[in-house]
Length: 190
Ligand SMILES: Cc1cc2nc3c(=O)[nH]c(=O)nc-3n(C[C@H](O)[C@H](O)[C@H](O)COP(=O)(O)O)c2cc1C
Image 1: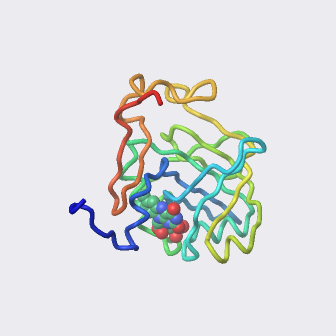
Image 2: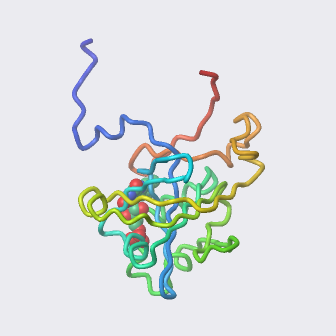
């Protein structure tokens, strides 16, 4: 095992394959924003709950704390550059807002007061379940999903279609760090 070497602890998390990167959107008092989040995880079936790590410096987190809600959009390969862009530039100091500045196209989902990212493959509307300890100590935010939608060309009847039927451009993005993503290439039966 001479080829085994230590991994710097600041990079150890990269050994863990991440689920699909999501875009986290929030709005409050006429301000809206969107950021990328690779550190996300489903938490429960029903009521459906999810979690996402939101750094204290993010403007999105501030809007979520103020409004009590957020919207997740699941981007695809065609949106890799957009995902990296909204994930590297904070909207906090963008006078026109991040959507306008980075040309993020959005649309309205029924009953949702936060604009959804157009061209994504799925969307989850979440109400924040306030957990101050988790938020302050670990930056973990928990949301109860009260509605969800998908592009039926990719995800239909409660599941992803066979990968072979999904054009590469519509496949999910899995972050490797440093703006590199893996896009699923094979489906195997376990
Ligand atoms: C692919 C990708 C994944 C990211 N994942 C996270 C994450 O899980 N949590 C986080 O706090 N920031 C994450 N970031 C960084 C934020 O998206 C970044 O700080 C962003 O500029 C925050 O925007 P805001 O200040 O406009 O809210 C990620 C960035 C990229 C490019």
